[in-house]
Amino acid sequence: MEGNDNTIERGFNAFKSIEDNYPKYVISLDRKDLSHDGIIHLNLIDFLLNNNF
Image 1 (cartoon, rainbow, N blue to C red):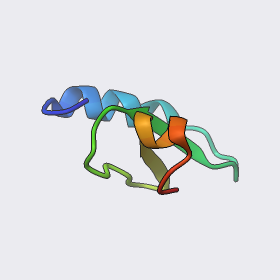
Image 2: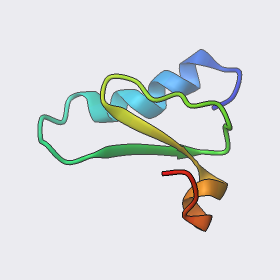
Image 3: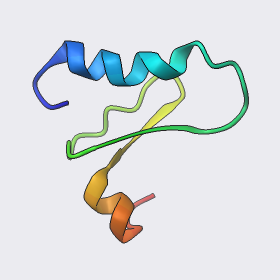
Image 4: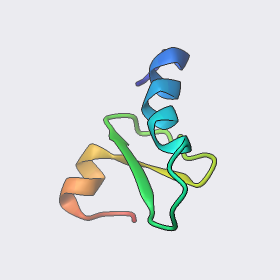
């Protein structure tokens, strides 16, 4: 996702139309927190190691 706004939006847009109360996550290799509109962004390494979330 890093560096390409179209790729970032594509990753997050898939969840925008889902109207439920379950948490939504986008997992990528980006270290920068890209969370927005209630969709949580996690770094893949942190997710796999269960760190920082």
